[in-house]
Length: 65
Image 1 (cartoon, one colour):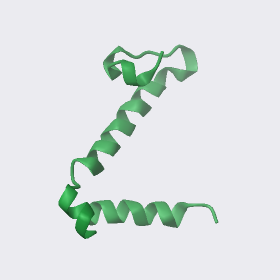
Image 2 (tube, one colour):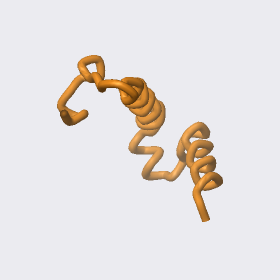
Image 3 (cartoon, helix red, strand yellow):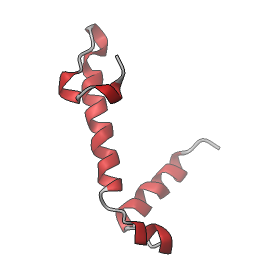
C-alpha cells in the first residue's frame, strides 16, 4: 500500500507497526504547520515566519557533523 493513494484514516499496519499511522498523521500535521504559514511572497523576499526559521535553526543544530 502506498501512503499517497490512501487517506490516513484508511491506513492500518499490523502488530508493532500499528502506531505508524499516528506517525504519518503527526508528519502531515508538521508539514502543514510550515507550508500553511509560508507565502510565495515570503519565499521571494526571504522573510520567512519566525516559527519556520526556528524549526530550520533547530534542524541545523541537531544535524550530525
